[in-house]
Length: 313
Image (tube, rainbow, N blue to C red; front, side, top):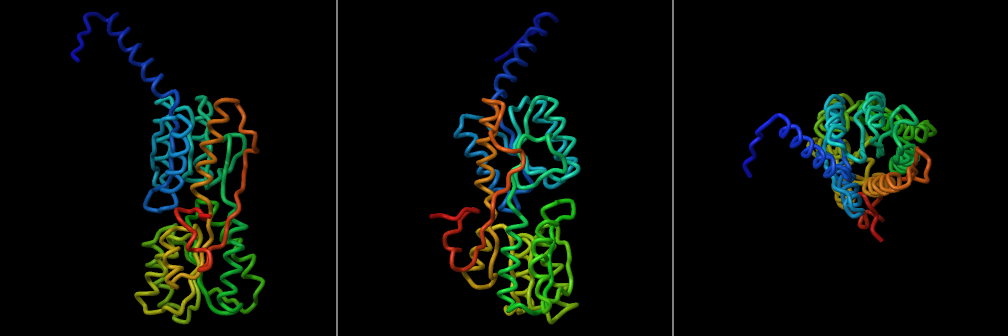
């Protein structure tokens, strides 16, 4: 439709009407912001949040910050400007994410964190995360059992700026450290990346050809390690991951990766959407800000029930 603005007054009125219409369209919008979908964990939590929010009657917009704090800040600024009702966020850094979440709060937009905490309380409404320490202890116990309580192993850790990387590593070592015959040869960060895990594992195999096990801070790195072991013709090396992805499930069923730890990505994202809805309607979630969801060990026995980061009945 053609529009002619015949005077500054008419133009001003038209712009005001357009702004009001835009605000009306955005008043029930929930923004979902996560790291890259290259990792199926983040795709699953985004799908979970989107499905539940839309079932509750909200419009959604799904965005990815790719673990880039500057991009995250720009995205949060953009959804603030758009007048989003709430933000569901898997953040790009425990320290760097405090300020943008605070900015959203000042703009009257509540944030509901999933998967990763920030290093501040009272800024986000909810921080819903997996019990990474409990999960890592499950994984550590299974790794020790598979190794026969002895042997030489290496560790692949996640991104240093992500508190989950440190919590999982501590959980592993608080278990493995109780076994004096378990000998860690090396620990390397692969930044949650399959490609980096492949390269780091190759290098560690060259430096330590007597490696007997690899314990990884997430499934993506476990997949990279397994690929490097396959290339090196080392099917004897035990690999344990963390997340509960379909890719690792298939490897467990094939016998190449031995175990992982399921963290309920889809469910915690749905829970965030439900709490956002309740908060927007009542100004309370009825829950504490920080909420931990327990993890589940996945082995060949229960792997057939695992799908999309959920255990099916």
